[in-house]
Length: 172
Image (cartoon, rainbow, N blue to C red; front, top):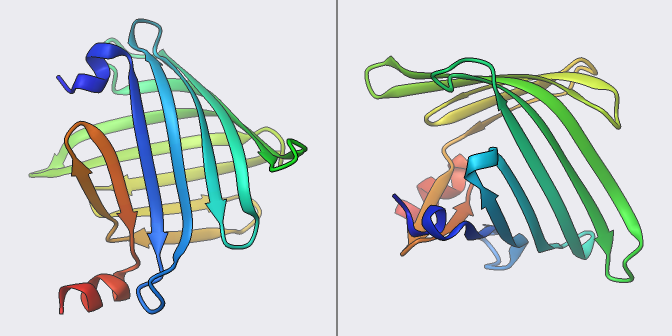
């Protein structure tokens, strides 16, 4: 069991690096408190984006088991961002059903999400496999994410997100 689950919190760091300039496109550091007996997490953190600069984030998530084996859950989640002057910038909230299919095929897990974004009033769908994610909503928006690289150091999760072209360049 990871140390973060034993002590009830984790520090999460994520960023995107422009491999041409070496400048971060965005960076996020968050401290999340996990209440595993309640299937709940609360987090507070800071985000840097080269367009919006610095913003602070408060987020929460509550999961309710639908099946005994935890393969299907009903999730309620929300996030609130404020800028450097602590003025409200963006609210997000969603309810969703998640379905985890472990070993869909050998060494391949699949996760399905069907949800409703409350503030935008838009239903959405996500299909995630080990190496790719398809996101789509009823407004016609969609994207396909492939090949995220995740790096960890000790028990503090970190991830460096690169697109597929940048991964090839980093390997060569």
